[in-house]
Image 1 (cartoon, rainbow, N blue to C red):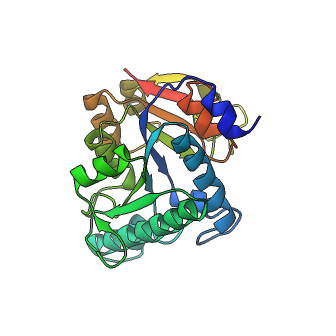
Image 2: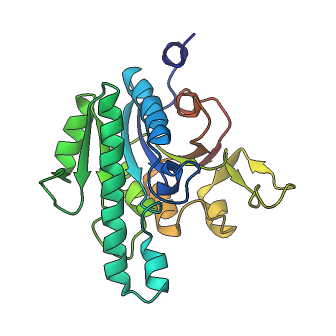
Length: 246
């Protein structure tokens, strides 16, 4: 049974979701840039989910190309460094759009910083209409403002789009008591409350993103973006993950 067929036979726990992935997830085994094979694999999973009825929008970080915080730490003016990071997210968004369309899907990139030569400007009603038509929407350039992370941008767009959940695809299969790559004794949480994440400073997403999801009652589901079929499993309400809710 194919991944698409398996997904279609299972009930969906979430109909409309925002998938947040880091720019680093696109690097694969490299140290910089975009691995087209990894980008294509993620695109295929997103497209499979969309073909099975899910309405999906994405936010992709820019850390594989440029991170504003790191630039500021090296002496750059913070606002300028953040704008450069936003431009990096546009590059990643265009790469993902190309991968999805190369597989026969429809995708639209909407940027919070207008650059009409390469993508559409972010307009909430336009984004909603694209999703209603079954297109995959990729939000780029963060919130369009410096001093805000792409985590906050993801939370903002999830709330604006009326998403049922914010799915965060990470390097590991959930939220752990410590970094499982450094501490073999670390254990994974199955569920957490928003308050526990903030109180324990678990670094799942920044505090403003967690608070925004709490205020809007949108659960956050953390899973491994590198596990084949992981997105389909989460959408069906199964699989290995950590769910953050009230």
